[in-house]
Length: 64
Image 1: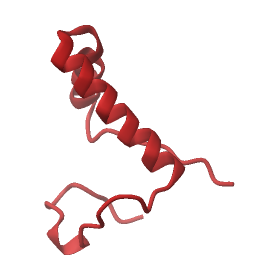
Image 2: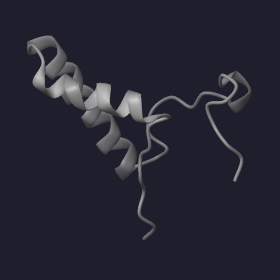
Image 3: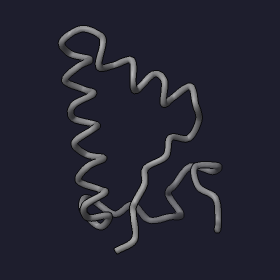
Image 4: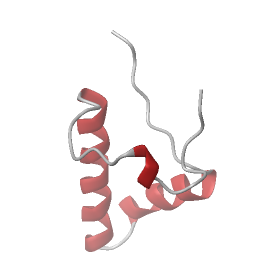
């Protein structure tokens, strides 16, 4: 099975996400919710609502 990874768009966003777990109650909860969503996507990348690629903001993805 292919390993699925999650990447942040830049280093600053990743640092901000990681800082949520050391913040106040609301921020910790937000961190837990986002972390759960990431875990769910790793298990099943097709879960959730599919947003058509034409609606994605420019620069959010790179063609491989």
